[in-house]
Length: 506
Image 1 (cartoon, helix red, strand yellow):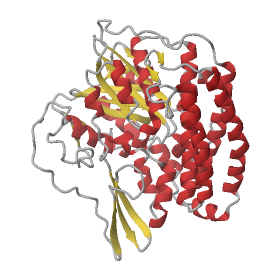
Image 2: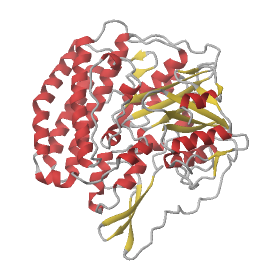
Image 3: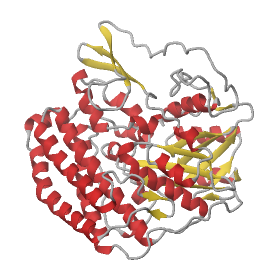
Image 4: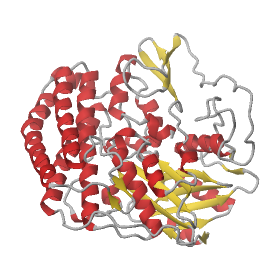
C-alpha cells in the first residue's frame, strides 16, 4: 500500500500550493485514493469542486500533514468516492447541485442543497445554467416492517434553532431510522465569494456560521496570508488565539447548559447561561463586539486589547473558576441528569473514525484529534494545553469533553494574558501581485476543525474559496447515534452534537 506522500508523487505537482502540496491526478489515481480512503488508511478532510475540476483533501494520521488531489472533469463527470466511502456522499451531492459535475457510480444522486427554489440549476457551473421546472418531491429512504410509522419534524422548529427537516421511522417509541434533510439555510456563500476582495470575503467567511465567526475569520485569514506569504505581527497572532478561546468558552458554557435543559434540569441552564453572558460581556469590553465579529481579518486584527479589557478577562477567569467547579459537581451528582445522558445517543469509535469526526463529537468517541495540536499553528505551538478523549461516545461523554475543554480554555486565556507580546496588530497586504496564488488553512473551532481552501487571482481577488464546516462529518453520524433511542431523547442527542445548519448549508 502506498503512503499518501507516495501516491501524491505519482501525480503532477501544482506550483504555488501552500502550505500543503496539491497534485493533479488522473481518474485511476483518484479512484485508488478513494479505495485506500475507504479502507481506513487516511481521513477525509474535504471534497469540493472548482470550475471543471474536483479536489479532495486527505490526511494520513497522525504522522503526516494533509495532501490535496485534483482531477479535471473533462466531460463533466468524475469517479464517485461516495460509492466507496460514505462520508463523501453529501459532498458529491452538493457538487452536483452547485456545479453540475456528476459523480459516476454514486450510490445517492438525490439533490442536497438544491430545493428547487433557485430558479436555475447548477448556479456555479457551466453545464445547465438555465431555469427549470419545479423539482419533484424529495424521495426519503424507505423503511418497511410491521408496526413502523413515520414522524416528520421541521424544517421550522418550536425553539430558536436553525431550519432542518428530520424524518423519523419509529416502532412505538424507538427510532428505527432517522433521515435528515438540510439545505434550508443555504446563503450562496460560494457564489458570493467569487471575485470578492479580501475585506469583503473575510466578512462573508465570518458569517458562515454565526457562533463560529472568530474561527471562520481566522481560518480564512490564515489561508489568505499563506497564499500571499504574509507574516502577521506576533501580538495579532496571540490576540486571535485569545478570541478563539473566548468563542470556545462561550459556546461550551451555552451547550452544557442547553444539554441539561433538554434533560429538564434548568438550573444548570441558568447558571451556565450566566457564565456565557460573562464571556460575551468580556468580549465586548475587550474588542467592542460580543461575538467578536469582523475582529479578525487578513493581515492581523481590527481591535487591540487595552488595560480595561485585560481587567475584564482577569475578572472573568476568577468568576468562572469560582463557579464552574460547583456546576461540574452538580452535573456529576444529579441522578436524574445521569439517567438521561449516560448511554444515550452512543456514537461508536469506528464510525467516528470513518467519518473523521472532529471536535467534541470525535473526541467523545475516542478520536484523538485537535487541529491546534495536529497542525500546531501559532501561538498554540508555544502554549500548554491537554486534549482529552473519552470512548463512551454518549451524550454524557460529549458533555464531559466540553467540561474539560472549558478548563483548558481558561488556562489558555490566562497563558495568553501573561505572555501577550507588544507591538502592532496589523500589516498591509500585497494584493494584486500579478500572480494567481492559493493557500489552505485548518483551525480548531469549538465544533472541530474548519478547513478553508482559497485561490486568489492575479488582482488579489477571490477566484474560489471552499469552506468546510466540521458539521459535514457530524450530521451523518447523528442519524446512526439516535437509532434505538426513544424519540423523546432526540432533542437531547441533537443538542449534544449541536451541528451547524448554516455552516454546512453555506
